Image (cartoon, rainbow, N blue to C red; front, side):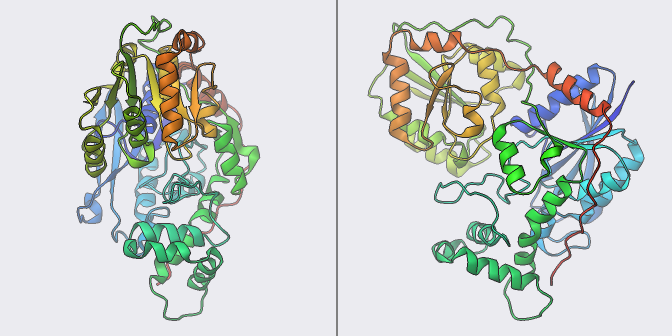
Length: 465
């Protein structure tokens, strides 16, 4: 039976093509190939001040009908509290309601709520449409999506009233010049401030609305997730984070991502005997949390001309960080910035390198590029975070190192270059990952089941002026 399926994502191709966007696109294309009707509702970042009616547009890509919401951190619709607009956007919800009425989907599958807000879950539930979620980062519990503190430490999640989140967001935005002071503020004190901001007692409290909004964020998001039909968790790490923060474990189905295997059918193990340069690759977003600076620093410590590093990524997304990387690379001819490439070329790109390095410094889920490297029979050198070490087994199909530890990463790279037969042995054990066809089979099987009994709809956040 042909289905009408509506997918959502925080941003989409052609302007954005990181892992979540590629996963959403791959699922959409595979569903179309099977004869289903597929539409996408996506966000788009903008700093331009727009009237509400101009915040929405539409386009088509590869046969997929896309509706787009131009989101910005500025008042819109009936809301003025900016922190609430990020997770409880009434304007997005109203448009989503009209979109559902127009296309009448049988199924809604959320791949990200960023910019759209989790208010879209309310609409799906009100219209009694089965709704599913594949989390690709920690957006539901963390305002920065990363569970990463500014000092590089891993965050366990929101405190009782999200006082720790309020401190972190304030240090990144309005109070950058007071980051040190905020860091020294005890979380208990921040929780107390958040509790006061939410209380009905009126008083002089700076940024009361935004503080209250941030304090309510995680609780409302988790309540909404518990109103879904099911959640496809890609890793045990994600399952642990969600259940530890209140998601009903009965909703969760473990399901690793699938990738488009086109181009990988001819992949063979990589042979390296030390008689030619060892070619390493970084493929991903050039942003601080992805850790490319750690990789460049480690590369500089190798003291060998027998290794090359190719860095693939958009040079314009985070220009200040890219400029830092380029400065770090000055004087090292073995480092080359390659720019971007069409995702359809990833098998070819990986066939021209010996290993992939994923030096993330945040609690990352398994990036799709890791699966692509394994499909290409290329070992992966990765930070030893739970999500990635579920896929990359140290000494079997890759090497792992302590996140952010430059010396440890340099030692891994040196081993690949110096130890005879190591890279070849790792390459032989790179097993093909799940295909996008198998992944979509799993989705369709679950769609066909009776939806799980759902929790009551959460109460919407209310602005505190």
